[in-house]
Image 1: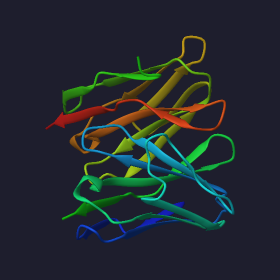
Image 2: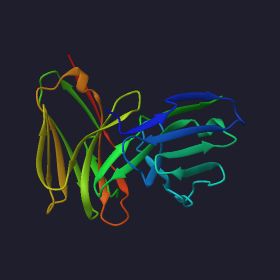
Image 3: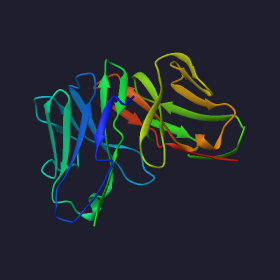
Image 4: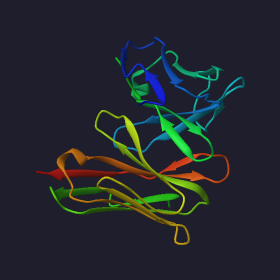
Length: 114
Length: 109
């Protein structure tokens, strides 16, 4: 069964609105969550790393005021795309490690901004 | 040059064929993952390797640490194997996953 539950799996929103994506770890505590974005036919690109109880670390070129990440508990990390624009349309996916080598992905969220 | 290189980028096979996808990496790793991504986008972890060989059903993954190379094999391929296969190297330092470009596999009946 799923180790990480990501919701919603798809969302369509109007330009200028905000969208929240949730990733919940099931049956274990996720102290770290990685958030990725994937454009069509491209590889996953790391956007930011969140750690429970502290500020997220953003990759170069990712606007932290636009992509708000909250990791307030050991089982929930959220990514909020604020003031979404059509160019933010993409596939967003989270990943959490378990132990030193395991990797568990959420199901992904396909965001379409119209 | 990417730190993780996959080949081929695209692969079309006939049902029943033996398939090999290759992955080379240039960073120090603690593990290498093979992932499967279906058209809907969801990602499934197929294997995690730090040495040797693993087998699951018709899938086999091998890794040669000295040569920094890994392969994913699919025996008796089936149309339902059609997907994008991605290798991802888990860095020693920092725990980041570095992704290959992916191999888009299409298995024709």
